Image (cartoon, rainbow, N blue to C red; front, side, top):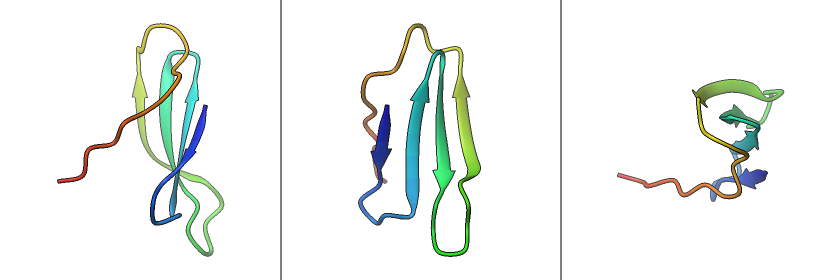
Length: 51
């Protein structure tokens, strides 16, 4: 699962058991910003709540 953020600076990737947030802003090459592990199964979609 891949999902781009509204501002285009973050890419969310879902793989077996994990969701990764990658920084793809100008000059970056997909540095991992945040990682959530121990998710059962394969993520199908992500909802990010903005404060």
